[in-house]
Length: 451
Image (cartoon, rainbow, N blue to C red):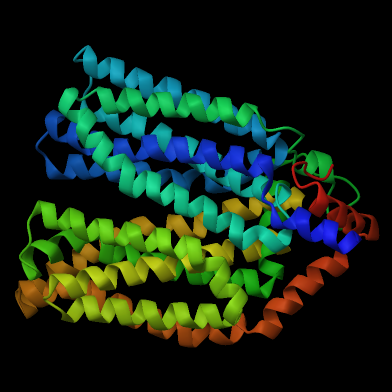
């Protein structure tokens, strides 16, 4: 009878998860609208392409600068309160940007500064949400929960947000920005409805330590040490840095590929991007089923094989339909990789270190992206006089395919089922018996974090 009750409890994601889901969807919908609004606003402030691209850099740099300290803050504070405060601050900052636009006081430097601050808020909110999720659902449901969350976020950010932003932009350039501010405010209200305490180190205590450290550098070292001492996590985070560098190298030059190699215009470019968004949604929905069917290790091997193929196909085709299918195929397996790797990390990292390890993960994964963007542009520029523009534009995709293939061959032995299972078992063994008992209780009452 107990097992039946447990099965029913763990089969539901729970009200807490769905409130977090709703808040994430609202903020992503606003972000999707701003994806149209901010570049368009930048183009009205300056015609300098370097300054316009600076807005994209401003949105990415926070991951490199703030991920590690943000992880410490997430582990020090009540994570729900932190997310509420960040969303309220983002709502106020976005509203201020809209008011400056209406007053005709905005310039490109103020815009970059605003986007930089919004990016810092995104770093904090994203790491906090990743640390909260494992306390809301049973560990057996993490792939399903992450899949549901990311599919909805992708639909809001990639499919619904941009067209809505375009429609609002037709009314006025400040309108989609005000809409973005409103979605942050609604997200903050939804997060206030979460019940329970979601504290990190102050509530759970340190694993293998008599007391929690109060020095920031010691807290940061604790997160770094945990990753370094877990070979699978260490390899995983380094692998993601390499893969994201390669992927961003291709993304940075994708618009040139569409224009020069496929001969398409802006509308068709939007269709290709939509194909990628559809791949993300489908991948998010099927991720848990794929893992249940073939296992985590086999899913990782599948990811490397399909991603490599998609990049090589993109780099050699001139057919828009084939290119669109390759784009959708890559995003589909990429989001499956993200679901299973994030879920694995959430399982093996103790709750009091979740923020710091999440910060380390994002520092590796997202901090490498600006390097890839710069590298892709430089590669095309360097090869154009040597190989011609057509093949120069193809080169980032071909090189990315090679990088994915070589990386898969190099790290595959680290992601075998035996190694993954040993990492999980080792983490369970070092937890005190009382903590393991508490984990069993939390599976039946997942809306509260262990304290």
